[in-house]
Image (cartoon, rainbow, N blue to C red):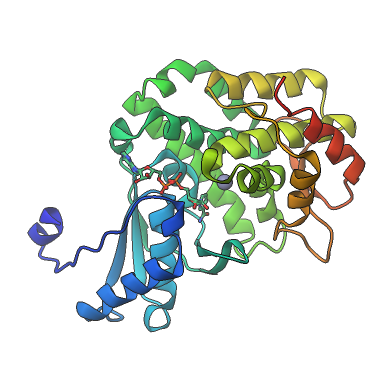
Length: 308
Ligand SMILES: NC(=O)c1ccc[n+]([C@@H]2O[C@H](COP(=O)([O-])OP(=O)(O)OC[C@H]3O[C@@H](n4cnc5c(N)ncnc54)[C@H](O)[C@@H]3O)[C@@H](O)[C@H]2O)c1
Ligand SMILES: [Zn+2]
């Protein structure tokens, strides 16, 4: 607030409680009320300072207030630095599902300061790294090598290494989003690990961070790719080793109901015309989208993720 004032900008601060449960209608309403109080108009701007929850809900407020005002993001979590801040997807959750109500609305500006991560709990840093590994796996094999080579510096939050990590992630995500902003095709590869990931996230409720659920989902998708002859077993073992190296789960920590989780993979809103979509790997750095993965195979692979 001080630096905005020093820059001659009039701003009103609006805060809300941390956590996924704040990505809801009542927070949206509170943002609208704050926007009304300070007479936010078309020449104004909403500045999101926080993690993916803050950018998703404030971005949706910006997309809808007065039919759309500008917004900017200063992400403060690794998840938001490498993924949530870019691409223009904004949303709130609804009883009908996660991210069920939202809009595409591109930010004017993204300003990442990796030093914000110094105060972020390590568990959230690790969770964000799952999306970074995802970007490497779907698009850039060499970036996977980079994660292996720089593992210790990444986990030590080395400023230069983090800056490179963020930059490379945003380049990869931008290249995919530029090719298909509204997700009519290739953008769906960004959902690698998210079909089973969202199912685990729902089943374990808020026990798992989003990135932790995505790590489990990536193991599932890699194993499905392997069973379909698209990915070698050495590549699967390597993916698991990279995730484990970042302290991410590669099997569920508690037993889960196999049928329920299988059912939840169907409930994914990424289903198109009744068939659920899986993003599979054809080697590190190469992803493709499939809607013909048999339930029986999914069931077997999910079963392999039960705790030992
Ligand atoms: N729009 C997109 O494209 C997109 C992409 C990925 C994820 N998301 C969304 O992002 C959300 C997850 O984001 P997240 O992982 O950032 O969660 P989050 O926003 O809930 O932040 C995690 C926790 O970290 C705290 N925090 C934030 N910055 C901190 C800092 N610098 N130091 C200490 N604590 C800090 C927060 O208060 C919160 O308790 C999900 O709702 C997901 O759907 C959106
Ligand atoms: Zn994600």
